[in-house]
Length: 92
Image (cartoon, rainbow, N blue to C red; front, side, top):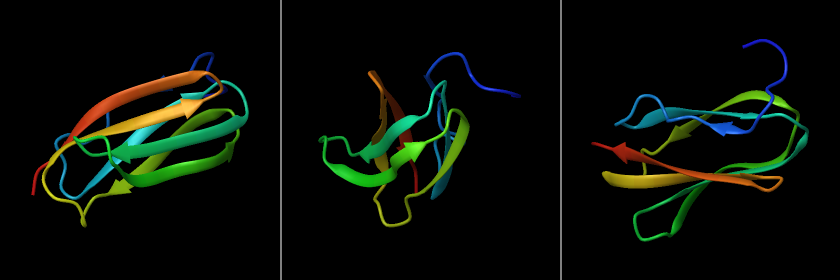
């Protein structure tokens, strides 16, 4: 992946299921404010992974869920009119 992406994208975390760490990849085609948060099955926010301005490009964020219990979680990327939610499973 060289250069700048042409579209927004949020990839499936890897590995999935995970214990206790996983990586989340996303891409943004323009500089801007990025929010990447993790929610539990009831919709409660349990972690903020990114909450800042970022440059255009390909990005990877690590998520350590060692303090959370096993279950299904959702991660949500929001930036410049783009929103995507994906599901991941924590198995301890």
